[in-house]
Image (cartoon, rainbow, N blue to C red; front, top):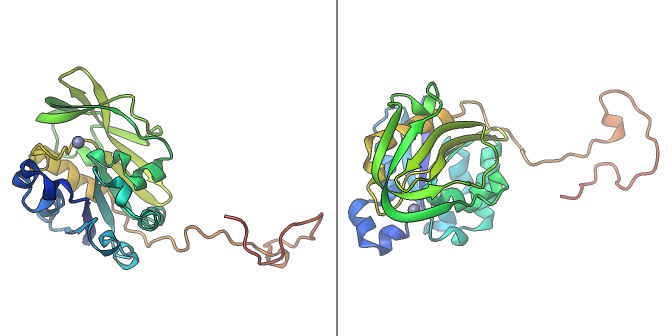
Amino acid sequence: MTIKTVVWGENVHEQTNKTVSDLYPNGMHGCIAETLNKSTNIDAITATLQQAEHGLTAERLAETDVLLWWGHAAHGDVSDEVVERVCEAVWSGMGLIFLHSAHFSKPFKRLMGTPCNLSWREAGERERLWVTSRNHPIAKGLPDYFELENEEMYGEPFGIPEPLENVFISWFQGGEVFRSGVTYKRGAGNIFYFRPGHETYPTYHDKNVQTVLTNAVNWAYNPQARVQDVTDAPNRPVEDAIEKIVERGPRLHQDGEDGFK
Ligand code: ZN
């Protein structure tokens, strides 16, 4: 069993900021893919915003088991058509892991349906991540807490719907706390949001963070076949009803006609 994984990177800061390109010469997406590929059951490739269809064609998504998404400065440049395609892939069973500032990405907001806002501060604070769900597969192999010496602060209130599970809570030196590892199910797809990963810090080189990402890919993987025609809304005619019925009352639509969407 191989989990086909795509690490999507916006790839803007890596091209424009020397601190970021020094930390991640192959991009954050390249660093994350390299980490994931150390697992023999994961086959990770990368895709970026700048590629045709952002590297997320229908064919590519159809064969992707788990997608990871890092975006920040160019959320608005992601085409709505690709966003809808990504969401449909999730509803039909693809796993999706949102990283750090992807809380404001178009697919995250579309899948959450809430503002996804938070408070923030860029001051290189220590972040302490506490495991709040000890037996959770995403926390496998981790101590009860781990620390990142320099991170951006994200603080509550975090404008997300109530998660299915909370896996991590972060504390920051300045006093704020944050739900930094949360899971959701959307349609047939597993979703995980993981907070750390500010571009000017070496977060994706951290061993514990790498463990979380590898665990998360394994957790998000859904071995079942994709649900087909996941957004279809068929109009079933009276004569096709499972039990025999007689039509009653007035109606607006004709048999077989498409409804409004
Ligand atoms: Zn950041």
